[in-house]
Length: 243
Image (spheres, rainbow, N blue to C red):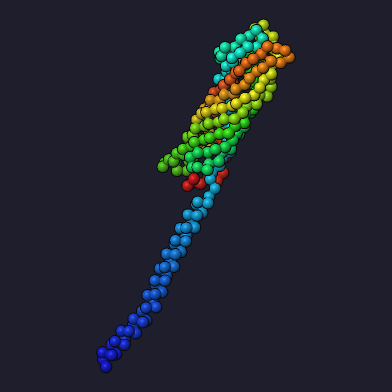
């Protein structure tokens, strides 16, 4: 009788303990599932974030500008020697970049070059429209974690539109009628960024051709090249720490 009673009590205790054990297991399973769901949601949220993009507005100064021309205009012959501008040139530009990849921006830009005089060529003004690539490396400082610093390269390629006809002169100083044909634009350089402010050095070239007009004798192929010092500001969109 005593043994039967003890066996009955043991079975009863096991039956009473099983639901509590099962409930504890279910709670652990639910907690694990909730944790996995939260991780998945967080991962999907980060993956769905749009890539960073930026708008850059710049002022450009070109203390060094020159034309290298081959050909002739009337009785004047050009043999590729550099002809320099008499004053510094200035331009304003705007660029938009989209970063589909963390360290590489691709975009487009437009630049308006104000008039500058070049001996024997008159006043020159160009509007450049171009596509651009911008490999960029962000710098993170442990001592200044809130600062946003970066170094980058610049590659541009497009088309330059001359706003007015080149004014060629012969050896006697007389104007030679001519027609200016716009051509390719390209440039390359490097820059640094600190909290949105940017500084750049850019080497840029505009190609052009000049032909006869009104019965004149003109046949020129030329390159208008500049070394630009740029300062501007970067407006970032959708900046994220993990991008």
